Image (cartoon, rainbow, N blue to C red):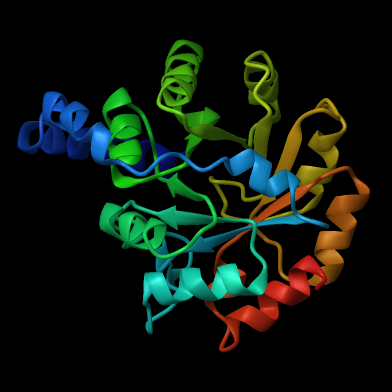
Length: 260
């Protein structure tokens, strides 16, 4: 695990314990019945006529700093939906990405497409928290999780009706992910040690992923030519945040990427 990832995970463990003390798990469980029914994240991606775009609502990041000063998460999500995004990813980490779980709830109540909680999920508490907030899917990062925890969180999310996008960067972790036989896998093109992005990381690892798996490429996707290159390698979905969030015309860029 990279130094920054270790730091983030350590911070996150403290956040989880603080959240648990303020809102115990038993209270979250009682709120489950009020959560909106899960929308099918994978089905929405499969229904996309070309590349399936997971458009990300992200205000900042450790590598880029502040990405978008004029930040209205609900307005951005509505633009994404109108431009043809299949799904939305919402950053909920606050210390490093300036996100909030409340953004996810507001977005979920304002769009008809599925929404994913993107965070550093290490504990069942966060999975339950995501579902209560209205998430249809969660991100699990293989580099943050051992086999036992990854499997437990994956199946717990499934019990709650959510899909998981399981993200991997290190090629050595891909076999661990494939053992879960998860239908949805993401390859992060950003080296978390150097923050350098390289689309070849997705195209190289794609050859090791079964064709039946819906494969998503994440990070460093800037132009339609990037998307076409990824599709030629069998990649069916893209997760794009920073490129879209830096645009004056977000919708136009989203349409360009999906080729509409």
